[in-house]
Image 1: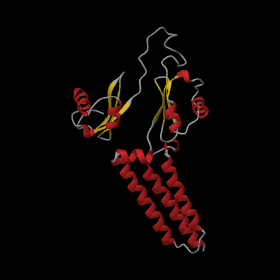
Image 2 (image 1 turned 180 degrees about the vertical axis):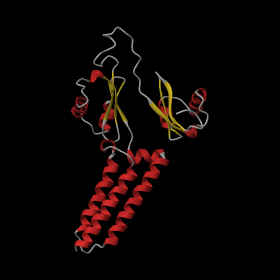
Image 3 (image 1 turned 135 degrees about the horizontal axis):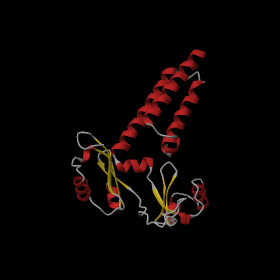
Image 4 (image 1 turned 90 degrees about the vertical axis):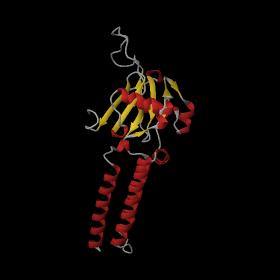
Length: 230
C-alpha cells in the first residue's frame, strides 16, 4: 500500500509542476478565477485517489494526463481566439473613468462600494477624488491611475504643468491586432498600420507589444531584431 501511495504522490507532484508550467510565469495575484478552479480540481483528483485502494496508479496517471491535456488545449484556444479569452478568462472592467464612478460596471462585477473603498485603501488611496482611472483586472485586483495632482510631491507645489495622465490601450498583442481596443479609441486597422509605418514598423506580425495613449501616442516593445531595434 505504501508503494502505491508513494507512486501516486510522485505522479501528483509531477502533475502540479506540469500545470504550473502550462500556466506560465504568473504570480498568485495574476491567476484568474478560471486558473484557480482547475488547480483546485486537480488537487481534488489527487486527494481522492491517493488513499483509495480501488484507484490504481494507471488510473491516476490517466486522470492527470487528461486534465493536463484539457488545460493545455484551453490555453491554446484562449491565446488564439480573442472572444474565447474573454469568455474563459474574463476581461478588465473600468470602474472609474476620468474621475467618474461607473455604477453600472460596479454592480455588473458584483462589487460593493465599501469593497471598492477597501481595495483603494490597500493602495494608500482614501478618497475617490484621488483616482482618475480604476480598472478591475480579471484576477480581481484593482489597478489605479491617480489624478495628476495626487502624488506626494504634486505638480501644483512645484508650479509646473504636468503631462496629462491618460489610460493606455493595448493595440498589438503577440503580433495580433486587438480590434476591440481599436474600437474603444475609435480608430481602425488602417490608422494603426499607418502609425506603425511612421515609426518604421512595417511587419506587424513581428511586433510583440504595442500600446497607445493620447499623451504618448504609439509605444512599441518586443520587436524582433531583424525588423527593428528592441
